[in-house]
Image 1 (cartoon, rainbow over the protein chains, first blue to last red):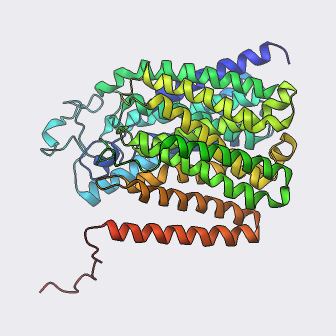
Image 2 (image 1 turned 90 degrees about the vertical axis):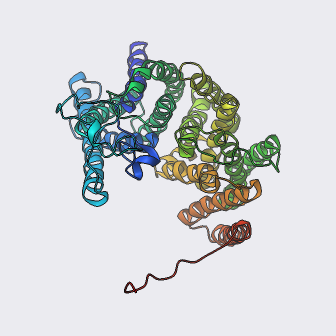
Image 3 (image 1 turned 135 degrees about the vertical axis):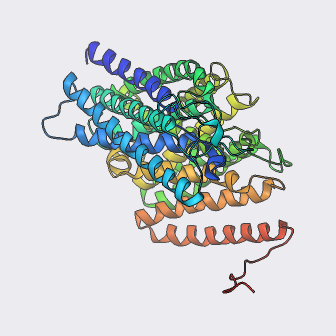
Length: 236
Length: 263
C-alpha cells in the first residue's frame, strides 16, 4: 500500500468527522419541551435526530456505492455517492419535520413560531407575536425547516465521505464499512450534541456561534479514529 | 434541560468494584468462548452481561450530573467508541503480526485511548461542565467495546479475524450488538432517573437489560440451553425489578376505563 492511498482516505475521514459535527448544529432540536410543543424544533434529542438522518444518508450512500459501474476511487463517482447520501438524509429529516409539523399544527393546534429571531430571515414573517407566553416558541417555522434540510444534506455528505474513505482504505465488505461508519458517525454526532448542550433552533440561534469548538473537537477525534482505521486496514 | 432530577442517590455498590468485576468477567468470557466454541453463547454471553451492567452503572453516575442532552447520548457515544475499538482489536493483530489471543487486550487498550481523547475533547473545546466526564468516558468506552466484542465473540465462537469477520460482521450481528448492548447500557438509568432513584433498583434493571440482550443473541444463534437460562434469569430479575418499583412507589393506582358518557 503506497502512501497516497493512505493520505487521501485519512483526509476524507477527518474531514467527514468535521462535516458531520457541523451538520448537527443546523438541525432544529427541541428535546422534551418540543415534544409538548412548548419549544421550537422536533421533539427529540440531538443524537437521535442526527443518527436518524445520518443512517439514512449512509444507507443511501452505500446503495449508490454498490451500483454496478460505480468506483469509489473515481472523484466523480465519489461525489455521486456523497450526493446520494445527502439526498437520503434530506428526505429522512424533511419527512420527520413535515409529519412533526402536521401533528403540531393540526393535532396540538399551535402556530409555528421561532423564539430566537423576531422576524423569520427567510419569509420575513413576524415571529414574536405568535409565541405563547411561558414557552420558547413552537412547531417548526420555515427558517428552522430550511436549516434542518441544510444540516441533513451536510450530514449525508459527511456520512458518504466517511464511507468513501473507508472503501478507499480497502474495507470493501459493505457490512464492515457500514458498521465502522455508524460508530464513527455517533462519536461525532454526540460531540456536537454536547457542544450544543440541549436545544438549538438552527443557524439563526445564538448557540450556532459555538460551532467552531465542536468542529475542532470532531477534527481531532476523527483524526485519531482515522489513524486507528488506517492501522486496521494494514491487516486486510 | 437537566436530567437526573434527584441528583445522586446513595451509592450502594462502589463503582470501581462493579467495573473491575465487569472487566474481568467479560475478558474471561471472551477467552472461554474462543477456546470452547460449543459453549460460546452459554458462557461467553453470560459473562458479557456484567460488562453491560458496569456500563449502566457508570452511565448512572455520570448522567446524574445532568448532561443537557439526555441520557441516551452518552450510551450512544459509548457504543460508537466501542464499535471502533472492538473492530480495531479484530483487525490490528493481523496488521501488526501478533497472535489473535491479544484481541481482548487490544480492545481494552484502544478503547481506553479513544475514551481518554474523546473525554478530553468534551472538556476542552466543547466545554462540558461535568467533573467526572473524562474518567467516565474512558470507562464507558471500555465497557462499550467489551460488550460489543463479548456478544459478537459469543455469537461467532471466537475472536480471531478469520472466525469473527464471517461469523459476526458479515452476518450483521455487530449491528445487533451495537443496539442491544447500547440499550443495556443507556436504558436502566434513563428509565429509573428522577427523585427517589435507588441504586439497587437501577442495578436490577441493568441486570435485566443485560440478560435480555443475551437472550436476543441466544435466540439469533438458536442455542436452546442459553435461551432457556437467559429467559428464566431475565424473567426473574425483571419480576424483582417490578416488585421493587411497586414497593418504592408511594401508591399504585390503575387507570380505570374512561366513562362512556359524561354524567
